[in-house]
Image 1: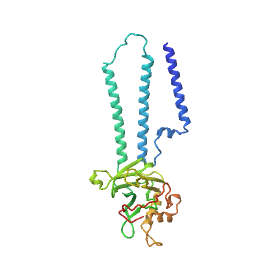
Image 2: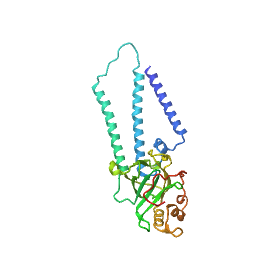
Image 3: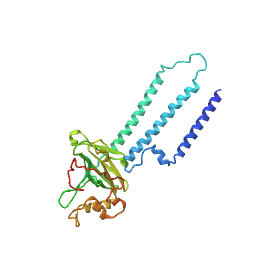
Image 4: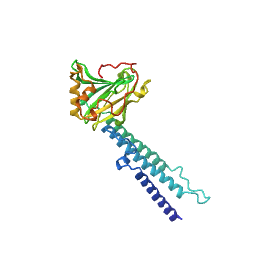
Length: 308
């Protein structure tokens, strides 16, 4: 009887393994996609560190699950009722109780350690980032100021969204960018899905004990849609922006133009005008690539600057 049970269990194990292999192969996923366990592809090292935490947490959960399932099936198969005789009782087995109390504690401690180190990495700040951007949220749009760059009239380079144009947050790829967040009215939330990161934007963050500064590095050129992720009023769902990550030399060319006067208009170049003049392909398209402005009157609040 024991041999038959063992043979049946081995056969079931082979069938389960075959079903799992076919299931993975049928998805058409690469090995890298399988190891992400559904985690979206990222564009920053901070998001990649979170992906690593996710991957190893899932692997640990699967290992624990296999052990628990194995113990359950072992108990079902080898300790099923064979007679009316009461089996030996082990409910007061002290060593066993210590083991199943200690093991979960160790698992939780390990997960807590790696979660804390990942969080510290994501929130880490360099003393001297390559670029600093003041992100100003207001109902229902965004303003992006660059305090280290000045227009000819002495004001910070600034980009403000409007009902006709998505605000463009232009930053250099492969360089450290610091974002300093503040709201002009209600609580908003700065969210770029490809970064796998969002942070609430408070009015007067110093009074709310909120860390309103974070940094990241975008590891490639690209255009990424950004959104407000906090219900902030009537047009919250339309409060979008767009990130343009340019090569450092393209970003510098962009900023050089933003600090000059456009001879055709007699005022500093706007974001759209500077990108159009650069003429460097899709990423320098002055119109939005990944999202569109919504057609409504967004005059409930005014941004702090006058750029566009």
